[in-house]
Length: 146
Ligand SMILES: [Zn+2]
Image (tube, rainbow, N blue to C red; front, top):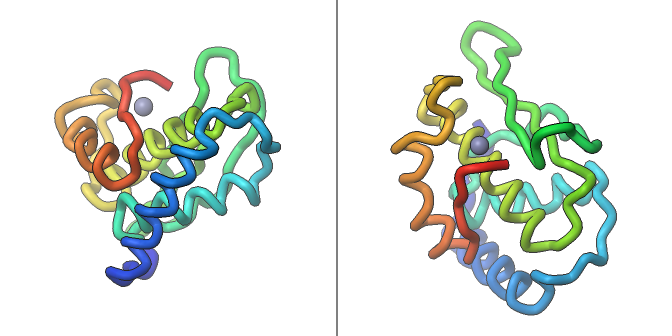
């Protein structure tokens, strides 16, 4: 588990995300690189998850046939839980990018923190219990598909 963020860090991250979405949400002015994705992963981790998630082992960036994003759980050893995250290079707007990344991070939370992973009910009650928090903490929607 990563280091929990301080109250101040959390507040700063929430403000930064909301301002960013308001002023640049529609902008398609970025290149999808692993550095770019990890940078925003950290802001989302602090704003939404109090900084408790562990950075993904890898972020895979390419065009996927049938999804815009995915999160795959794995275990480096019997106790540890980690994920790899995939993001489509077809994503072009900043709000779309952050919405999809936050969605995959809710799956990450389910695996790392709730310690649950049911492939047949990927978007169940526990998943959607994050809908209100995503909206209030980061100004982002939580939708079923990506
Ligand atoms: Zn999903």
